[in-house]
Amino acid sequence: MMSNNLEPPEKVIYPHPLVFPLAGYSYPKSSIYKLNETWDCHYTLGWFYTTQHKSMEHLNERNHLCITTPPNTQPYDFQSGYCCVNPIPGMIQTTPGIPYAHCLDGDKTQMIMVACLHPLASLSHYPDDQEIHNLATELLQLSWEGQVSQDGTELPPVYKIEGLKQCSMNFHAKQFLNELWQLNMSIGVTLHGDV
Image (tube, rainbow, N blue to C red; front, side, top):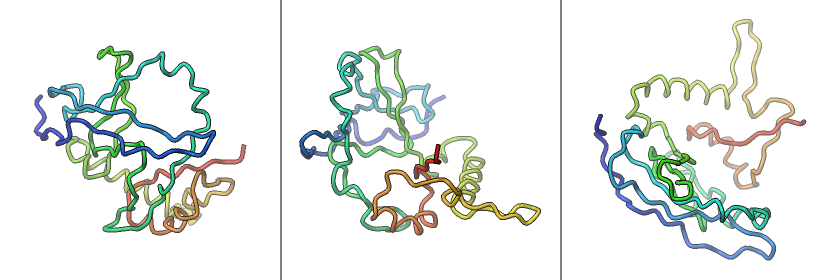
């Protein structure tokens, strides 16, 4: 089956320029990703981006254990229901609906998908789009508003469940939290329970 979706405009996606971290730390650094050259039936939209993953280069991961967040990564505004952030140094901006994969040691038969950003609009190409949309909307409501059960018991929203703590959320991001659930379908806030 041939995709009726147009080829993404970017053939190559380069990371944003790097900044230098404080001594003893490192920042995440993305690889360069290239679009597949021909349509591929293994992917719903027919397109994906890949980069090489060389196993031998990752044997000494201890050199990167002090990874920290680059500066100026917090949201600075909301516009049209979306969080506005500056480009993150050393990282790429993903194209909605297009998977990103690592090709292991140059072997194109050994690929691992590592990311795919799917806002609800990019799911319209899938046959179960309406079901996904309904379930995502229900999950959003349960996550941010909670629910009242048939017996009248109130179930709190996920972020208010006792014993959970927000993880890796800085002060500026917390300011946006109350607006975020109303404006954006992203529910990717990490929560941890006391163990």
